[in-house]
Length: 350
Image (cartoon, rainbow, N blue to C red; front, side, top):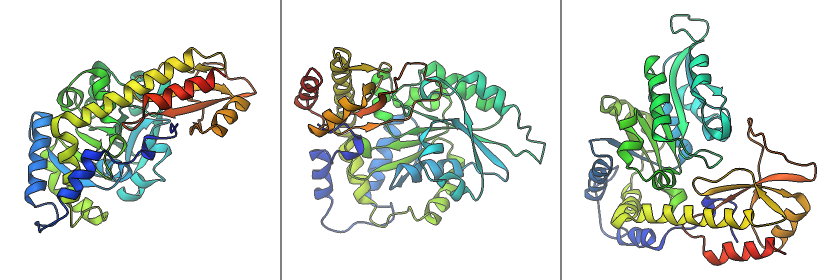
């Protein structure tokens, strides 16, 4: 019963087979091979326009380099207070950009509140040299607490960013999970709503090690190519990342794996909701479920083989957590089975 993280899951068999198929023979290195080029074209098809695609190893690299693409002296990127980019990247965006800052914005359940963003970003007049100046806005889709920005919400935040002449970055580590939950298209959830650059995640959704930066502003592609190389993220044998994405996209596999993960989260949430010993903290929208459970009960579940973590309370969380309780996070993946979820439900029921 593995609900600790979708990073715990292995590679989907089809993706593993794709890696094996690409293992033999010779191919042009550094992203110029035939398979790389085919995958770049596939990204163009998926996003319904020409995009620049840069393979990287990790979501941290994708986020840090995405923001660094729009770096400027005194630059400030605005993100949610509890976003991955500000809490879990060990200062990588500041490091790669050579000293830009991340500024926290409040908002309920992992999402930037537009009014807070407008008020905060407006404090930094770009002509005032002492304060620093706006550089980018970053949103996470789906968020760190399993919620999702609706298309109109993305557009609203983009409009605020554009009014201050800064780009919008989307951290899409769980991009596919949000996409299928909204039942929309990659184009509608990104550039058609004003997103300028995307961290496109595959690792959490069935890939072995495949992340990409998708750049919609093609004029910046050459600069990002140099940034990626300097950051040690240009793979010589990039065909092995391309092979994963080729299998990931084939016959809609990436959407199927995301739908499965989301469905398992909904099934898990139903089991928690039916339980007398746990309660949902809020309704899940993607593949992360958060529940309030007594600490002793959680220890019993973990001792019985369920893997999950306690979690900090979101800043604006108004639910009740007793002194003998904690908030816990459960994450489902393409590899989660109904048997795992049902066994957990039976454990909860005692």
